[in-house]
Amino acid sequence: MLDASAEPLLTLKGVHTHIGQYHILQGVDLVVPRGGLSILLGRNGAGKTTTLRTIMGLWKASAGSVLFEGRDISKMATPDIARLGIAYVPESMAVFSDLTVRENLYLAARNGPLDEARVDWICGFFPALKKFWNYPAGNLSGGQKQMVAIARAIVEPRKLLLVDEPTKGLAPAIIQSLMAAFRELKDTSTTILLVEQNFNFVRSLGDTVSVMDDGRVVHAGSMAQLAGDEDLQQRLLGLSLDSHQ
Ligand SMILES: Nc1ncnc2c1ncn2[C@@H]1O[C@H](COP(=O)(O)OP(=O)(O)OP(=O)(O)O)[C@@H](O)[C@H]1O
Ligand SMILES: [Mg+2]
Picture: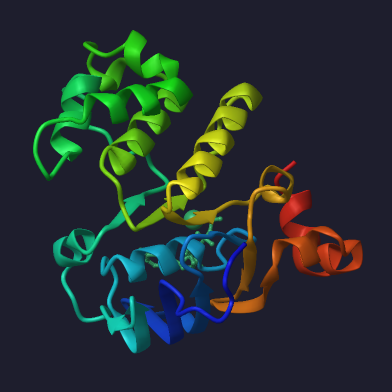
């Protein structure tokens, strides 16, 4: 059970982000409780990716604060933010195409050599990684590259994992193992903020859920509440669900 009274791991307060002349995030308020799995939903263009990029410092917030463990990280450089224990798996699979799967994981381990036991644990979710261990990652399918990208992010324990729509283009069986991986990761005290379009993939996975629209969070609450309220789902997600099935 999440302790709602404990200090959240991550809190965005009134975050605005401009990209060039465009005012994309328009006062985002978001709370990610420590040890939980938080889902960020919203239709195409709602601002989900921009929110993750702003947390990582890849876009700078023009106003508001991004608090990680109570400390404002909104002015910090991306490598320093990553060093605090935040890993980011972007929408487009971040792998080194010319390097093998092993080398991709090896480079992602910042604190020394690969932890073989942890690699075995990760490969338990994604057996394809072991199969293609010594192959260039560029030769893998889209789904397999996605697995490499996620494996890179969790090759060492992290405090917070940000994942942007990992299910895009994956077969149902792979999505199931991905969801199982997130569930187990959560049990190892990694907090996860997962962006997803398909509500049905995450309705039994998330602890908390936030819904974005037009650069703002328009709903935040427990997943149990949203999963049990079809009217609310229809009102908040009707469009995004229709457009994604
Ligand atoms: N580099 C950019 N330059 C200009 N506008 C951008 C840029 N990146 C994003 N935007 C705009 O910001 C808005 C939010 O985009 P964002 O990628 O955050 O949405 P999203 O919720 O992740 O959507 P999707 O579900 O399609 O991935 C969109 O209107 C988009 O056109
Ligand atoms: Mg996006």
